[in-house]
Length: 165
Image (spheres, rainbow, N blue to C red):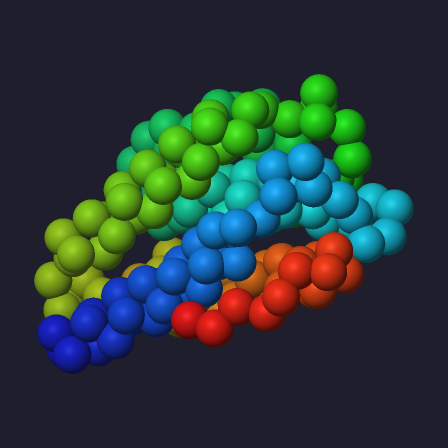
């Protein structure tokens, strides 16, 4: 993978995060647990889920310590079931701190890889994520975009205006 490919992957991750942050920028704190349907994803869950996703990539692909509370994997991971009860979740400052920090760590890891490592195949057990280490940046950007779309729908249902990036 060339340096240009690394830059493109980092740009995709940066844009996805910019969109997510824009959607959260004026999100009412008292609506963070609003679900469009019972059991549906809400803004707080989406923040936690994206955090856990970054932590999982750091642990499973980068083979680094995830630095994320272990209980969060059950709370925000694949198969978790969001509730509308704020008492079930960490505080928003705690969520945001981990959300920002895990992405910083993940970006630093990607930037530490040379072109050869970025182009090399992932271990077989991780092959469903992407074909190469570098391609995981696209997977992460698309994943975040999916959840940004959910945030956009929640915003509209709450009567909040659309956001232009």
